[in-house]
Length: 349
Ligand SMILES: [Zn+2]
Image 1: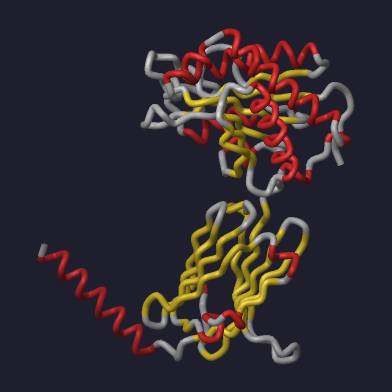
Image 2 (image 1 turned 45 degrees about the vertical axis):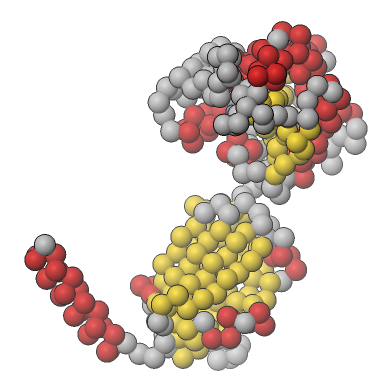
């Protein structure tokens, strides 16, 4: 206890000394976000007054947002709306920017993305002031965009269209379990195997992430490893990726089906909408709609992807339906119809 106190105390001394030597803080003068190239968004944070070093800046990136912590800096005019400029091309990428002096002379900048960004590919550099160009000193952040399904075109590939079916869960992971013990992994597999037959009969090549009750990666691995193993089952020229699941909720009254796509995926959204329409046409279940979400298999698939929740396995009525061979066959037909419509109506651009 005493030792800990001393350590804290000496650390405090160092900090106090450092503070006395510290020059006057930098004052932020503007944030400018624009599209640098097709893959990169650039965010420039300009400042005057004090000088910033690499050690003043720390960052935390995720797929959806980034946070910048800047020591020895005041928010200045960028804490007002007029201090932030987002160029039109970058507006689709940035949702909101928050700038706050969270501690004395310490500014935090939170940038929420509209689009999925590649957290690994980002860089931060410091650029000195450029008098000739009348530019203040800048913090330059380059954020890589996630190469989404929408850059993908089937016209690059010839031959049979390849459909990837991903029966959710399996092996050590039962998924959700219904009141009488029906497992999500068994329903997702049964429906996918039936859809495999129907799609093959319609002339598609079908790739299954699993055809039996197994973990696709291995039992006990992390979710990301298991889900990446499923994404990796898709050949590079796959046309569509469809992940099949059942919903679950603590309250057994929750009911209905829904379909998902990745937030910025236009083609994925079209696939999700067609799947939703075909599932609704079965008529048995409440339609909870088409939704955007950042499910791993959708945000990591290179081709248009959708995840479907066939119904609530935790709802006694829907559990019974989902377990019935007849209803599973109808679900498989609905998936096949949606895929057919995807390619026949409007096709691809
Ligand atoms: Zn599931």
